[in-house]
Length: 247
Image 1 (cartoon, rainbow, N blue to C red):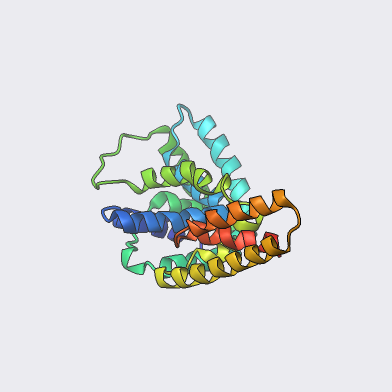
Image 2: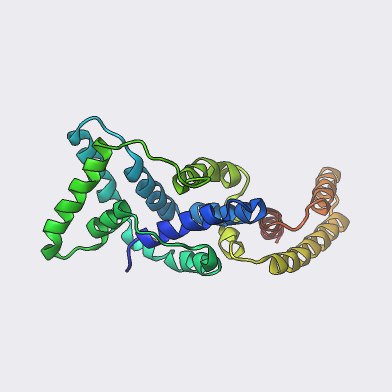
């Protein structure tokens, strides 16, 4: 399989190049955050590639220890990463006009260490590790040349994706998330209208069948809440999850 560098650079590029359009940026950020939520392995690759590039240590030994631990962890996750690359391909393909690949030597070095397992490449691996550790120990202040750096966007994702999804989605809703991520606006509106109608009918049936006043009251409250939902991926996931729970 190809390494992770191309995916990391593409995602950074999509966010950076859509930042000036708040609506487009928010949509792209939501999709990428959702992908990170869907796959813990993807989140770990995304986070560690970002952290290895930006780590700062006072001595070589500390840098080497951190790098070796991170690399060993990512090597063990390669098989799991392969399972979600098709999702990344779709996300990137739908936004290819925003993708601008500029080689990041740190990501390239990581790819060579993690994904090139041929024993003939040992000298290359040693050189790549040396370059990465040297960057950690001798990092210099970077001059910001664009309105927002993709590394800042990476940090936003790593800090906020849990806030966006972790506490608001049930396990059932998280399973539905995968199929919702790549919906465009028209498809989302159509699917949400349909699932909302089905959910309301289902709740009405349960209310008419219920002989428990307390349950009926809760069902009415749920119905009233659903009526306030507008078409969004989060609302769609919640209503779909509720339908599964009701069936």
